[in-house]
Image 1 (spheres, rainbow, N blue to C red):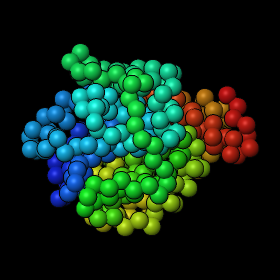
Image 2 (image 1 turned 180 degrees about the horizontal axis):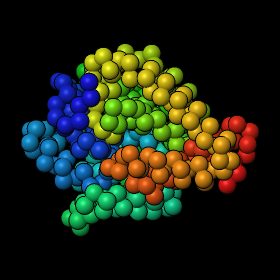
Image 3 (image 1 turned 45 degrees about the vertical axis):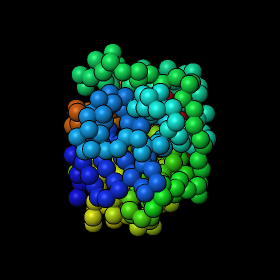
Image 4 (image 1 turned 90 degrees about the horizontal axis):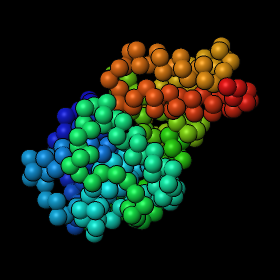
Length: 303
């Protein structure tokens, strides 16, 4: 079952934000924690939801960035500047990226472009949303545990969607926060974005498949519960295999990385014009994936 409306998932776990960009709040006995930084333009929605759901903001003392893409770090600058005592966690590679001037510029540029595409560009005039190198925090890695009292989050390194990606698992809630490393529950399918290295992406899915999951808390298009959550990673493995085979066939047929990526974005956007990632950005993603597939096939990636 796929739930795309923000609200309480169960005791100790909330879905905040919007359908296209999801933020999760864990409420432990000791303190609360935000998981995923989402898109910048969510800030007014989050503040309204704090009030609507009667969430005690003073208990939020931690936030976890699952990877450093622009649509997963957006609310962090506002909340960190508003509450400097909040501890921000990300992988060591994530912090490395988030201190690069070029990465910071890209985060801010893409955040504004997507906000504009959604008619939300005015949010930037009312809030301090831009990322800069004043945001610092703690590095986490494989096997680390973040203690919230009666809840904990276990960190699992899951590269492939990005080089810096981690997932988090709460054994008490049986909740998996795999970000895009676990697949995106878009419409009635699962998108499998192995952006940086599709082979590592597939290996990361295999790493997650044996976890006991009742809630698959995705970063885009809501969370998945019950039977579908229990089989979600297995289904994502299947979809990833099919998507890889499609890219291999397409690249072999057209013989050029750029041509293959252009065809993929044309076909996808025609069927999914409302997808959260705008075509300009998605074409770069597809080009990167096809180039990896071409290299893995020993073709060298012409184009």
